[in-house]
Length: 264
Image (cartoon, rainbow, N blue to C red; front, side):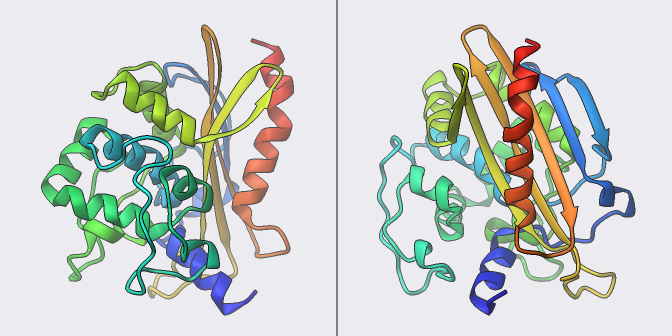
């Protein structure tokens, strides 16, 4: 793995200590209200959300007015921004932000909000442990809390959050929900619209160093068609290999969904 790619994954990933029980991963389906229908593995241990946090960030961005629609604002890259991946060193729109998991675009949203409004949104969304304090002693929660430090959420909590989102129970407008769904669409299966977001990285050892022998991936989202929704949350824990854990999680969900959707 190149230093460039490794650093990019670390910047966008899960860097906090991994609970022992979470090593089994989780595969969870829930109904459109976030109530669990079936689950396998450890779905209760909290982990940093990594790039899956771009889902609530999109809601915050549209609700606050920082984000306008799927293609606006188009923010130019600046040398001071994190540009580890070539795709991050380009002008970025909301749709491109989600597609390429552009970290600096997320940070532009939170810096524009400021800590007070940022915390208010996380509290109103009841998102995970709601802890935006950041890394101890660094006062960096505004731009780092979800990446590697204080904010954490379990797969079960992800499902409940998504349930409130898709059922329209979050304190945001219908237009905000629609724009967010639009930029998160990944595919279509038998008339079902599939929306989701990956997250990827490495846990920390007890001494604070990165455990590069363990890779964690998320894929979370929902399938929808008129009158029906199915929420999915999948985590994968594996040794680094040719395929990243986040890609594996996404591929496993997309492979399993057709059979699951036929039951509905």
